[in-house]
Length: 283
Image (cartoon, rainbow, N blue to C red; front, side):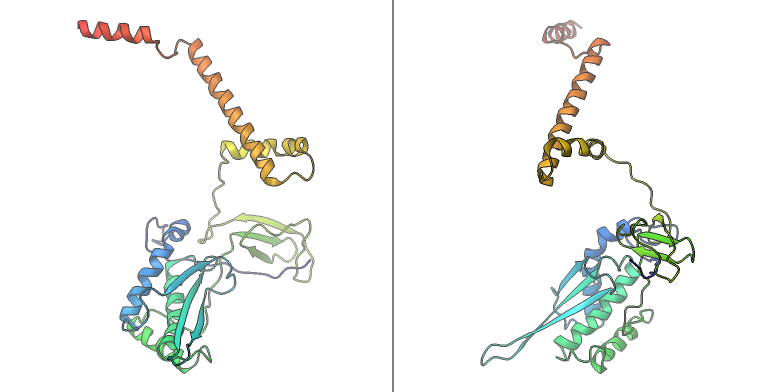
């Protein structure tokens, strides 16, 4: 099986925790992106489109857009004897938009499409005269904003592999490349090596310490699956693992209590508490 090469990206942001360059960190941006998108939409609707776009336009984030930053969906409905009604909604890519700067530029681009449809009632060609007119309005209001006819971003892929022969790199959003099955598609057919997971700024992700439950599942999965037999549904296997984990945890807690009691750390009895209270009354 052959693969095609991919690229990486940089970032810019403004809320919560920032990196050394003053840019919004990946997780902080992910937590803030919905609120930030609504704030940017309201601001640009007011400053660029004169408030002519719906204040509650449907804006959704989706993980299914992987090669484009955003898209606008159009719909036109009309009842007999009534004027047509124009609808629009915007989808934004969680896999591509990882910084506030990309979000701002992409959202403005899609809002120009929305304006061309809802105000001018024109959708084709997608980047025709009506789109470009609204794009010029946006760039006049925001000179630092480049509203082009395409979303020209380097996409950040968290997982990367490199060919040992030609040094070509491959990126994926998930760890979907198996070096035992895949080879370089650049013509050399070289062996691929996993480079690890990285943040949007290129720094390696810190390894996460697995929780006690995850460690228990990893250590006992094979045993439980073998005991329950082939064909057992995954939910039944996980249910059994959860029950065993709770039992194991309860047993450990009982052992800790017994050790504390043996060391003289047992909790006081009711008689001991009553005696202590009487002594306090005498003080």
